[in-house]
Length: 167
Figure (cartoon, rainbow, N blue to C red):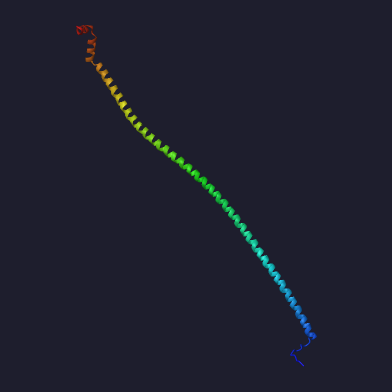
C-alpha cells in the first residue's frame, strides 16, 4: 500500500460558503467601484486635457490676434514714418532754396544800400553844385549891375566907340 501525504481538505461548511460568497460579492463591488473610479479618472484626465488644449488654443488665438494688431500698428507707423521722412526731405529742400534766395537777396540789398549811399552822396554834391551855381549867378548878376560894368557896357554899345575900335 502506498500512502500519500495528501491531506484532505475539510469540507466547507455552509457558514464558510456564505462568507465566501459574501467576500466574492464584496470583491466584485470593489472591482466595479475601482473600474468606475478608473473610468471617471480617465474621463476627468481627458476632459482636463481637452480643457487645457482649449485654454491653450484660446491663449494662442489671443496671442495671434495681438500679434496681428501689433504688426498692423507697426506697418502703419512705418508708413507714417516714411511719409514724414519724405515730407522732411521736401521741407529741407525748400529750406535750402529759401536760404539761397535769402542769400541772393542779401547781396542785392547790400548792392542797393551801396547804390543808395552813392546816390545820397551824388545828390548832396548836386545840391552843393546847384547852390554854388546860384551863388555864382547871383554874383554875376550883382557884378553886371555894378556901375563899373554898366559903364563898360554902355561904352561897348556906343557907336563911336565901335568906330575907334574898328579903326
